[in-house]
Image (cartoon, rainbow, N blue to C red):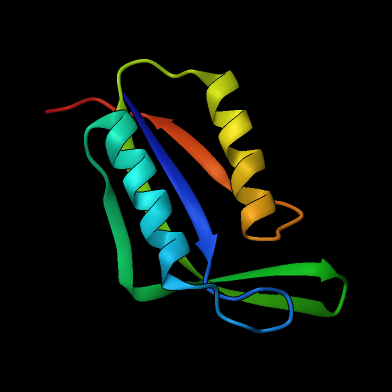
Amino acid sequence: MHLVQILLPLYDNGGDPFPLAEYARVRDELAERFGGITAYVRSPAEGLWQETPGTTVRDDIVIYEVMTELLDKGWWRGYREQLSARFRQDLLIVRVSEVQLL
């Protein structure tokens, strides 16, 4: 079993919030394809990273998760590229972990 997480920014690089409809669209796409989704949207997570020495960048994000038996890496690469364009990101994180259900 695989757990796939998508980290979506709340704001574009200019600080403007993305429309709520964009998050609903992603939610609906994933729920339709994978039969369910978990969305962490109530308290945005905070991402911090060093872009250059001495320059820290901050981002508020929401996290969407789906579980799937089969991992279609090609589909996920294409979907990440679509989301990167829709959310105007140079790099949008989609990560996967192998999980065991207990």
